[in-house]
Length: 121
Image (cartoon, rainbow, N blue to C red; front, side, top):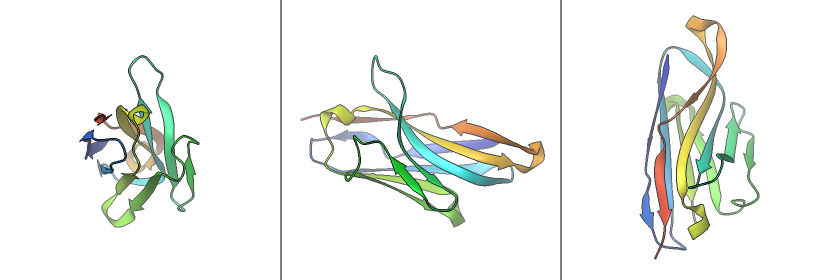
C-alpha cells in the first residue's frame, strides 16, 4: 500500500506564510494527481488545490494568488506554499494522492493524516 506523511503545519499570524509538505511512499505506484484539501471546524472538507502528473494545477477561488502547489517527482513529494494567510484559512489540511498501484493493478485514492494550520494573532 501507499502511505502519505504530511508536515509543516502550525500557528501563524495573519499575513504570514507556511509551507506544507506531503511525502508518498510504499508500494510501486504512478501518480495521476495529488492535491490538498482542508476541513475547518463544523464544515465539510473542501478542495484547496490539485496538481496532475502533467503539472496542470487547479485552485479554489478562495486561495488563488495566495497559495501555490508544487511537486518534486523524484521525491514523490508535494508542497503547498501558503502566503498572505487569513484567519479563515484555519483548518486541518489533508494531502491526497490519486495513483495507479502496480500490485493492485488499480487506481486508488489515499489521504494523509492531516496537519493543523491555525492563523491567529
